Image (tube, rainbow, N blue to C red):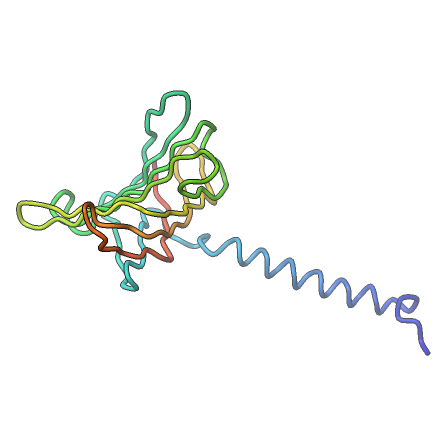
Length: 167
């Protein structure tokens, strides 16, 4: 019986397996890598919605901490739907996943649906926001959550949310 380890075939096989695992992990982490700057979109109850009008990020004043708000409009600003994704933390906002109600960070998603002279406001029951890139000029990441209409049990499910916006 031939010893694979001594013949070098084992190390080649192990190397190929290791490269395949690394390629899979890299591609899983980079799913938001090709998102163009100015993108802010999500599936709301399975329907694709873009909030690219005036999509941007801003630093929020947080006493003793740091905060960012990513927001944009669908259609004309102030005349149609608005989406906001908010993180506040005692530490600088960094490359990590922020989960509403976990880890001491404040995480919130707000969705405003404007109609003639009033609006419906949905706020997150649960939210997950992942920051995959952040620097002084832009922020990129993903988000999802379940929102509830203020004063009722009506819910909206947000999935496959992505953002890549400037500060």
